[in-house]
Image (cartoon, rainbow, N blue to C red; front, side):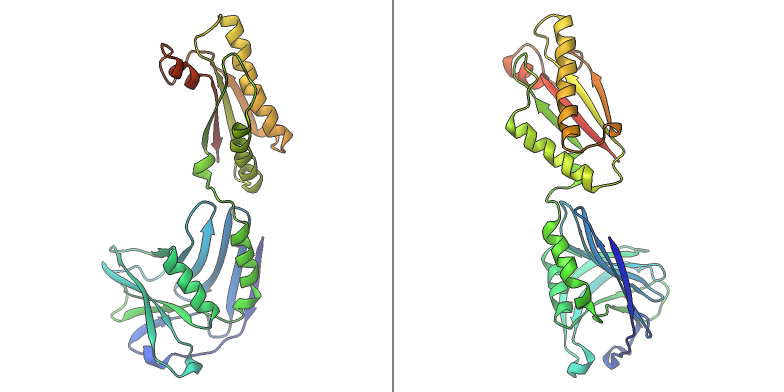
Length: 282
């Protein structure tokens, strides 16, 4: 879900005159909220500079990112700070963190505790800011976020963060389900693992295919292993479909004992080879 709103805003920071300053447009401020189980972002465009964005993707740390279209950096330090609001009559600024930038860098990023602190400060009326040297300016670049009508979006953003899936695409991209000897039934732990795939696929519209491949060990005759290999793929397919995954996304293959992941000469190896492999594609 994406929402936009525009509000007028006029302010100045007299203590920043030594820097080339960028801030949301003098006549308006735009906030954009993206709210889904796999992505929560709260961003604003900054005129003649680019964008600033708080955000988190499923399974990844919370972050604050400034992205510029116009002011690639020189090699050197980048300072993330918090400035007091101008009506507070204070020139005090608080450093959050200093990071290093490469020549020509356009994306400046902090995450975890530092990014959370920046969100807390903007919620209290202070201004997350960015300082660095640009290839295109003789002055230090200073970029400020706006606080105007943040409260119209922040509650939804915080609710999105709470509901965010706790695992990433990379966590469900490749999954192996193992089976007992000559069995094709799913255990409870295997069902829990497959439900993670279900929930992510339902939340991510970019998923285009789920490939299932059934395998056996070398125990038993080929005719029996063919049926067992087919059944191990089918039970996973049916579980996914029963929980809402469209059949059109699923492909199925059976490889019998032909592609072992471990030696079939040991009991442990055979246990690993009795499996269905699940691969998810975007």
